[in-house]
Image (cartoon, rainbow, N blue to C red; front, side, top):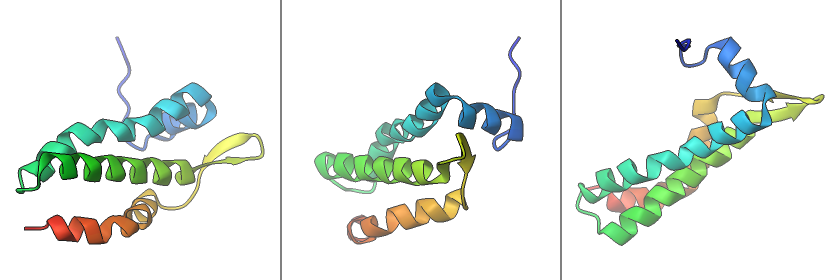
Length: 103
C-alpha cells in the first residue's frame, strides 16, 4: 500500500527536488488548475473565451512561480524563498485583467 505524505513533507520535497522527472511533473501540475479555474471564472459571468485565457495565464504564472521556487544549487534542486510570495509576484501582472472580471 502507498505511503501518504503531508503537503510540504520534507521527504517528499527531497524526492521531488532531486528527481528531474518528478520535478517537471510537479511544475506541470499547475496546468491542471486551468479547467476548474475556467469554470469558476465563467460562473462569475465572464465569457468562456476570456475565462479560458485568464485561467491559462494564471496557470502559467503558477508554473513560473514554481520554477523560481525550485532552483538548482550545487548540482541539487533546492526550494528558494516563499512559494506564496512567489505566486503573488507572478500573478501581479495579471491583476488588471482579473480586476476587470470581478463582478
